[in-house]
Length: 180
Image (cartoon, rainbow, N blue to C red):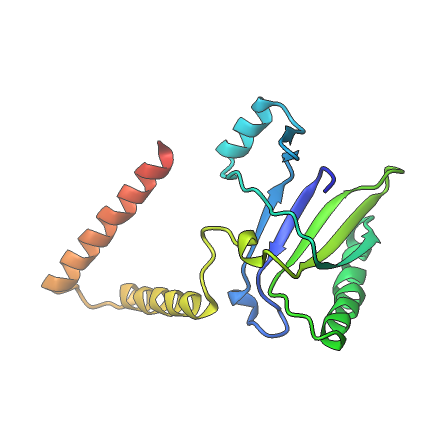
């Protein structure tokens, strides 16, 4: 992999509702145990909420490289490149559950994006925060239900007040853990 940025896309937007599609982004910080940036940059990334993750070496993948010059390159990628790859995967009966986009420069200094559909080690690309689509649907439904309740004009009753106090306490605990 070359230095640059990357995106991990866990869901096929043709099959998954837009608000349920999950992804992760990152910066390629090092390669083959060699850091490409100084420790100060690593500290900045940590302050901005990035966590270190080691992407696995992949032996089998469907890969397409295209030039990346900006907005129109994204349109080509979305409407042409991904369709070409999807057709290839279907025609060859391959199974892959995620895609990786790596944005970098080639040997000539031109912007490129490599679209990679790993065929092995797929589970190693998932971030800790990723949840199944079913679990995400359930969480969003609960959040929607809870927000509907909080918008109601009725006063909370005894058990509801205790639940709200416990939830607030849990939220404060999570916030304090992240600040450490």
